[in-house]
Image (spheres, chains in turn purple, red):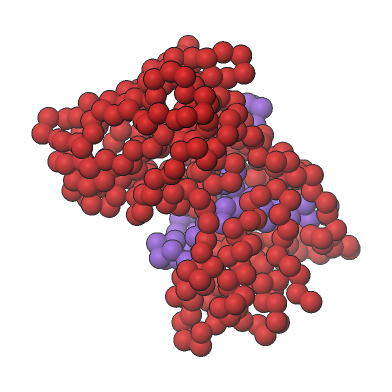
Length: 74
Length: 347
């Protein structure tokens, strides 16, 4: 549970304060639930990396519930 | 249950920390390690490839969130991360927990951004309203010097549409390489090799001399381009001198520019200040006031503000008025700085 709470706080800082009121983004956000991939689709199998350079295949995330949150420094 | 942050291209280059888009996977991995330090959280990061394949595969949003079930199926998705909603999702999917840890129970070991190797503020920034990042490829030599200064190329909508308009070229010191400009040598100079028929107000130019012996301000140019065919790339060559702690380097590097929008380039926010004017912010937010009551209820709010709605609703009336929205902008203007407080809890 501690992990979940940490995640919740960290997510607050992780996201950029991206223009919540810019017209293009508003439209996109409203459309998001209807866009692909949809709920029910499989997570695409691609290779990404750990910060220290190891390859990670998204297929390897199976076997658990997994929460993915996109973020960046700014 | 596993949690991951996915490190992607910068949503807002030049914001807090003056970070710029990395050019290599090694540089992006360094960003992710720094992000882990700045957040001080235990949630691990994974790093998207330089072709942004995972971002593209999952809808191209800056701060989206997905819950994947054990079979690899997407069971929840939202355009903006919402920690409270994730908690509800997981309670629905796997059950409630005995003790809920609150945000305020946790002390994160936040680290400061990477420090620039020299002072900033010696060179006035250029305004570049309505400009958008365009695609460009740095020509990376396997054994070449790092791109101590990285090009940010932008074009205005007219240029993107017609090939005639404004072009922004900004050479930004990358704080991750610990370098600064060497102002004791000739200033940065660039040269554009334009396709036949294309014209430019400054196909070659040199940055103004800067008084201090070193600094880390960007070297910026706004040009008029004319008849740049949208299907013809432009080669750019830049020369400059940069110093690290151990050595100074005469650098010559090249880029190939394409006159098409870079959808992974992020928005550098005009002059890069990343500052929301409180009145303008409130006005823009109130553009979503669908029922015209001059306030926003939860259904009319979106983005990063939504997860914190209750905290921003300081008078507890269930809506955000102009005064409360101006306070939101104050928070947005500072929340990227490590140690900056989260929204003030409702009393």
